[in-house]
Amino acid sequence: MKQIYVVGIGLIGGSLALDIKKLDKTVTVYGIDKNEVHLDEAISLGIIDEKAELKAIEKADLVILSIPVDACVNILSNVLDLISDHTLVVDVGSTKEAICEVIKEHPKRRNFLAMHPIAGTEFSGPKAAILGLFQNKTNIICEVEKTAFKLQEKALKLFANIGMRIRYMNPKAHDKHIAYVSHLSHISSFMLGKTVIEKEKNERDIFDMAGSGFASTVRLAKSSPDMWTPIFKQNKDNVIETLEEYIANLTHFKEMIKEDDFLAVFNEMKNTNHIKDILNGIN
Amino acid sequence: MKQIYVVGIGLIGGSLALDIKKLDKTVTVYGIDKNEVHLDEAISLGIIDEKAELKAIEKADLVILSIPVDACVNILSNVLDLISDHTLVVDVGSTKEAICEVIKEHPKRRNFLAMHPIAGTEFSGPKAAILGLFQNKTNIICEVEKTAFKLQEKALKLFANIGMRIRYMNPKAHDKHIAYVSHLSHISSFMLGKTVIEKEKNERDIFDMAGSGFASTVRLAKSSPDMWTPIFKQNKDNVIETLEEYIANLTHFKEMIKEDDFLAVFNEMKNTNHIKDILNGIN
Image (tube, rainbow over all chains, first blue to last red; front, side, top):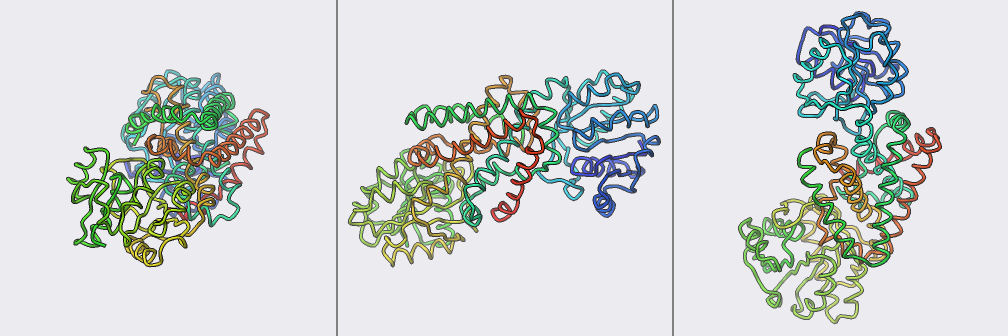
């Protein structure tokens, strides 16, 4: 793979570009982005070699779509129309059902691989890109059987080289599970931030009293609304379901406190403590 | 201060002991704990020099009460009965109203300083103690005017030496604000953990799909129920209020998604993004 086009030079697209350039110095990475400032930053940070227009992707060996999930669904058919037969196109979005649906009948469906690398931070833009971000991170691949075998091979070799662990899932299961372990966390964090900001009009008070625990739980409230709004839209039903369960659990916890049933409060926390063992696997 | 008694050799008590011992090699730190294993660990880790019984605190220059807030409220009068006139007693609990109330008429009230160092991790026990934990951390002191001036001086000198920043607050305001920036975070984290665990019976799935964002938001769900149950009990009214506001915000967010009002969803997140600036002050 010598010609790589990254559409959307942000945290994920930029980090992939950095890893790819490090692996093979003969690769040329082209950046495509609506945001000219981001393109210039990406060049000066050594993330991309040159700016490009979308029509140039006919020459691409690999096209990475790392743009918000609504833009990705809108653009993918057009991208597949433009590429050559040997081009591999991947997306990196946090929802997989809509993207797989939109090109299921496309004549170049076999040039596309739907994936979701579980990696990132709360930051965005090219400055947020990190070399080695994907080391030991999970990459969820959906509908692998619908991608041409040679392009699968090409993709898997690249993912192995940048240190990703691969998991296969169908898009429906992906979107359901990810609502619990990612989308819900973002909403809980945003609403926690909102609740505290609303209450503490004098921000100096928050600043002084908040510790690392608060910082940890609201970290995701720094995330980009441009990226997250279309995710919640595309995964609406699953997100609503997780929110309803979360709200029910919070309401139940509040009722136990209200009724002075602190033995139940204790047990509730005790039973959740084994999240430790789960988290040990993540970090 | 040469003789320090730490009642409860865990994360906070142990970390204070480590800092104090580092500052002054001539100090002897005595540990008092119901848990013999913790005492032995604390000795082998160099956190305390010797085990002691509570009655020995009559010889203490400083007594640190770092036990769950209910135990602290139960024991404090007895501790004040036992100490000498020159002894300073401090607590480190996450609630301040009950503790200040219980000894307000005690003849040795002036020997007590109520404080809350905003520092820690989700871990507990002597192994969780960290040298330098309080460096640049806020220590909230309540009702400072009720502590004897000489003992205030002694305390403030120590806190300055271990790097704490001091803030003064009345106990009522402390308990109200801390419910927002600490207690609510713990509940949101525990219930997030519960919601995901309930749904994902096969833990392997969570493990593979969860990333650092999930880990960050549920980190506090590892916290000790022994420590947190009495905090929620003592701060019941404030905790219920914060939970009601949090639940209302989550419910509103869910309704916006349900009604496909994604412009409102976007704005809600955008308006919360400035949590960045607040968090920059914490980390």
